[in-house]
Length: 427
Ligand SMILES: *Cc1c(COP(=O)(O)O)cnc(C)c1O
Image (cartoon, rainbow, N blue to C red; front, side):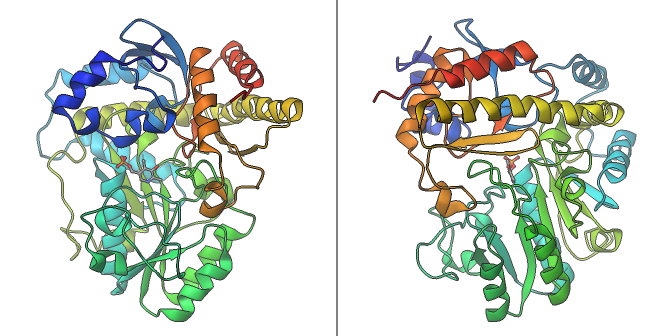
């Protein structure tokens, strides 16, 4: 195995690709080793270029809810490929997929297909501004909505209203229209509404899953619904992770709260670059060509991507029992973390919502970004390397989710649980 060895493939990649990766977290920087290069995936497992197999809980960061290389998805893709890759003209599969999404999600009457979650969130915000005529947007510290300029703002240690870009290259002016609130804090949202009268939208991950998994406290999502309705502000659920994962109707169904707009990604594309944003028909009709809000895409609704997405969603719709099974599987891991804490006294928290879960190495319950920041990330790195040695591939960062899939078998979950329970932090 490649632990803490230099990986020559990574050395070469770094000569031609910034940092050797096409998305930063893949570089394994937070866990002190070189990344594995993956040659193939099958079911719940991935195999690196040396042929080592690992039980995978990253699942491409969420899309592979049915595991790697599901036969039904691959077959749909193969059929689609035979007819050509892209036309830039309407296809009936786009309508089929859009119809299925509308049937499944309680908040979606019309939906626009795009190519990434970033694009979906960026476009939903533009739509919210266009539809309300207001400029400001509330986002929560530690929530991630893709890398568009106005949304790359999460934390300034100072005032509640201080909006500092997280990335170089984001003009301060962009960030100024992004107001920051604390996840699970009603008071922080109320304060922003007292100080601002031109708030177009609140965008929120209904289960935060990009600072580790942080579920909403009871009442938090209904509170957001109410305060938005009161102020003529649109509520956007970023369901790029939760959509089709917590339930067919995503977090909106799971928690019984209906937002005005929804963004989807990851699971909706079945492993291909496809994402979407949708909502009430009257709002969606603000989008060009029917309305004044412009948004377009050369490869939007791509025939191969829609084939993959449609195949995955069709399986989910035909097998709603999968959701209960997914939750049961995640519970096995949740219990193993609790056993570890009881047996060793290691300070840790385990948060779970449906098939999403995280362990946090801290003694403080994690309800927001500040809590998450108290984690011992060095301990996480040692735990990550322990799990990898045991043949378990986890997200290489404290601040990501464990993605359980429908194909993780009882035996694999037990093996994972044993590996969790056998972690001893001797450093
Ligand atoms: C992954 C993610 C995005 C961005 O999606 P990309 O397809 O990576 O652009 C947006 N929001 C949430 C909640 C995500 O987890």
